[in-house]
Image (cartoon, rainbow, N blue to C red; front, side, top):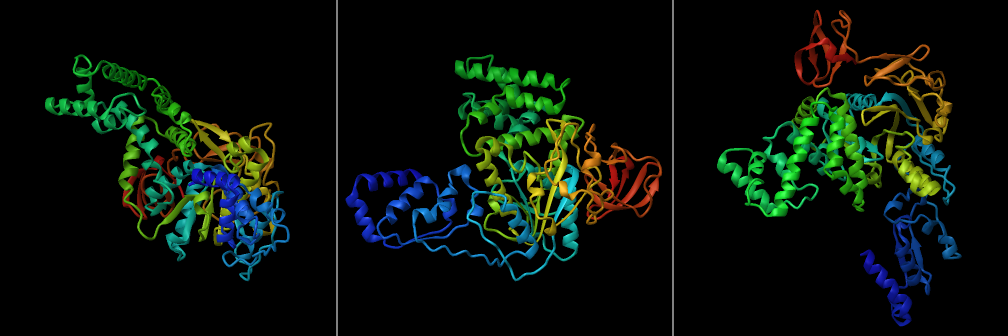
Length: 563
């Protein structure tokens, strides 16, 4: 359609008689979502409207969030210059959100310089303030959100009345895993679930084949991914030989490359692939599994293929693979990780009608929910570092508009969160809260954090959320209240366990094995597989726990933590 429109513009500019004919046909032009128009659409409209000037455009410059696919917010900003004398009607009454939500969103977006400006108002006075929460790391964030969803569910909300809106799809993994463990139904909008994505399945197929040469399904999936010149005909021949001899496909391939059954080029490519598998399998014995996965994805040419792909999803797929690699760091062995993936996939029975919605902020435009969670508000994540690097101030303003869209998806409650630390490629990095947090009006925000949420090392500058220091906790099962960035800014995470900062920057882990007698009957605990439960019996380091959804189980105390 875009290409056809370019030809249309060429015809209009080169053939005045054709343009005049269309002027006589269409004397009144109505355009919806004008803020999302691109250059070609803008030029086409200007040509078509130049005679009658009867144009009615509806749009919201504060919701222009599709610059990455060609939309130009300047089109709507220059409307009054393009059509002098046009009447501008500001539709400022909002029928969706409460007063606090609207005021918070308005305060945030007012920072943008490139906007027409408007003052939203609603008759729905008061309501809850926007909640902002700082937590220790991504695991704590997913746990916080899951806790609040279950609390809201017990309070009478349906799962379908709640949504998690993320900046990028790689952020979904932690929430999906948590929900599967706790059996919270969810639906991913705009794409498959994390573990169902093609690039994740491909990576898992490589790992399964390294773990076991007998995994024929894994071999079939990745023998020609990325393309190696090993086509379907060759794969079918391999399958026939394997079945006829009762051996694995890999074993059949090893025999066939010694013969002239295959074409020379195919034989060479298949032999190279088998050598790669052997090399990676040998490396598994000495190399950490997360690092091994990086090696496989690089040496196989998989990540290079994505980098060379200019499609709109290639960068997202690379980010998903980065998230996959970093998530493996919490497992001791490759075998343990693959068992975890198998468990997660077994738990995934698909969402019913009443399920929590998970989607990107871009997918959420036009939707609304009573309760909205907005996680990952950290510098580099949101606003996106790539967007700022590529487009500078223009990119930052579009990121801010995206934040505005996110907040205004909430009808009754909006809850923002950020983590002090993220694990990237198995290494912990300290995160700065998003500058957008500091741009929210204090009167419309209720802020709290875990003690020591701010993990910035020496030299890191305090650039966001500075006015939330020392605000009270809004209540949860987490650490003591306080918003102590200044006091704790010198603390740096040194291990992968979740922890808090106490006193003079001392790191105290809260997921370490418990000492004898640490748990008592009646205490609430959390288990990574069985979820939340109550201790009903203690015998040495063994606990009998009545789990909310898994029933009564006996577990070792080092595998649970206090809820």
